[in-house]
Image (tube, helix red, strand yellow):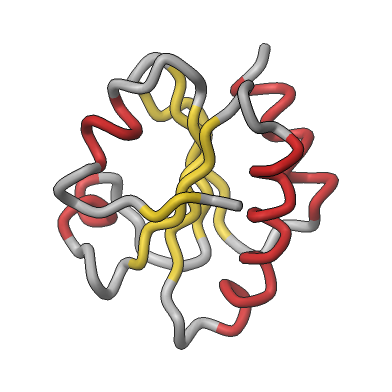
Amino acid sequence: MAEQVSDSTFEASVLKSDLPVLVDFWAPWCGPCRAVGPIVDEVAGEYAGRVRVFKMNVDENPATPTKFGIRAIPTLIVFKNGEAVEQRTGALPKDQIIQLLESKALA
């Protein structure tokens, strides 16, 4: 299950993580976000110990999405060593999320 992250915990949880991180930027009113949410939770379980997975509600936490130029949701960003290394927008299927992690987070 993905953990929740906020503007106030983002730096410590994501940017200073020893592991690669996947962040799902979403909102409760977003249909595609609700579709991809369970997939992100499933991937979080499968990659536990290798990748940290977080969800950020953009309505409750406006500063971080603005900092990373997020204009549409759902947006997934892979962070490695405190840097954003890949960003994808839209409800990606599980195989594309796994490919993203394997090629960018774990490469």
